[in-house]
Amino acid sequence: MRFARSSGVLVHPTSFPGRYGVGDLGDAAYRFVDFLVEARQSLWQILPLGPTGYADSPYQCFSAFAGNPLLISPDRLVAEGFLPETAVSYVPPFPNEIVDYGPVIAYKNSLLTQAYEHFSGNGSADHHEAFEQFCGEQAYWLDDFALFMAVKNYHADHEGGVWNTWPADIARREPAAMKQWSEKLAEEVSRHKFLQFLFFRQWLALKQYANERDIQIVGDIPIFVAYDSADVWANPDLFFLNEDGSPQFIAGVPPDYFSATGQRWGNPLYRWARMAKQGYAWWVKRLQMTFTQADIVRIDHFRGFDAYWEIPAEEPTAIKGRWVKGPGADFFRKMREQLGDLPIIAEDLGLITREVKELRDAFDFPGMKILQFAFGGERNSDFLPHNFATPNCVVYTGTHDNDTTVGWYASSDEWERDHVRRYLAVDGRNVAWDMIRLAWMSVADTAVATMQDLMQLGTEARMNFPGKTGGYWRWRYTPEMLHQGIASRLHELTELYGRIPSEQAAPAEVVIETEEV
Image (tube, rainbow, N blue to C red; front, side):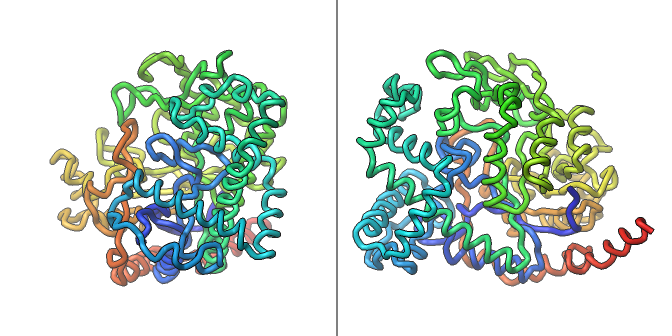
């Protein structure tokens, strides 16, 4: 579906400032929404909100439905009576500009356990009633997820608690074992349900605050789910798995711009034919949850719905694989029949074929344009704004997978920097804001800048490097970095280039009425 001409900012909640070692859904998040309002933005784009696992990546989560407890704000817990104020009277001296995940996870887990114990012994009747209602409404995914996490943590000392290393009976979800472990770990299961209750309580309150101020949330879901997840453990029949539960085939992409050996993601592949026979029921529930958490959704690796790169699980790289046809248009027709309009952004980067474009366009999904890609290699790239074939696209200065614009420009070859300077008619000294201006002035319906580019930060602020693990997803900003000057400058560009949707609504209605006549 088409979106009104608008703009926004890409930043994940983990990047917000605060004293607890990782950004959360507390005061800094609300101040960020206020910043968007002041800057006349319409969109806040985030990364997946799920509980992170391998290498702290939000694209490798323990569940496609659950939220990340690390994002729960301790200050909000105190304010609502879920924690005594004394629980946060002392906070370890965490670094301010990165997330040091090991110590942060240990500290916040301890704090959240205190919240659960406080709730169990001293929680109000209203809170208990709300918790019970949440558990009942979300039981279709919450029961499996809470048990998965409880059993996983119980076996954490053995191969990280990956579910196919558990005792065979519970790994295979035999009824007697499910009953036995549910009873044995009942308190831990309840604790994980409680943490999800807190996450959704805080996230949906923040989303409502944003929506009431005309800010829409752009969510993000990876097409595939992590192998070590409640989703695969609870639905093994929907994935290509071996008898021992290990993946038979895994996802990735062949060699590309980012990696000479491709990217071996490790996600198990779907049995699409089996899903189709069930009316894609699991996907319907997944998208329903996603549209509960967000207003618009970017689907990462959209091309996988047309064809995906199948890698035998025993292969050490992504070089040896093959393209396999995905569910195609049938999938999106079924989603539209069951969910109505689909406010989806198609991440259509990489090796994109005519068939992928036709699938994207058949449902009027906007694709993505990355300005950093416009100046590398060919001199007449489709990512250059004068070559945008349609306004129905989303233009980015860069994404979470790119270097910051300042870092990218500094590390580029001189001929590439020369191309940038001549194309934008600038000297390169303010390249981040020059690229933001280029995005905002383009014909693209939607323009998005990363927070790092608004702050003109270098490579040290890069969020991720595809294909590499360790040391990523850590960037944070400090309060003084998001200042009035940024809001004013962004406001000016947004107004200048007509990206305030309320000011565009009347002309759009006139055009539609004229065509009907």
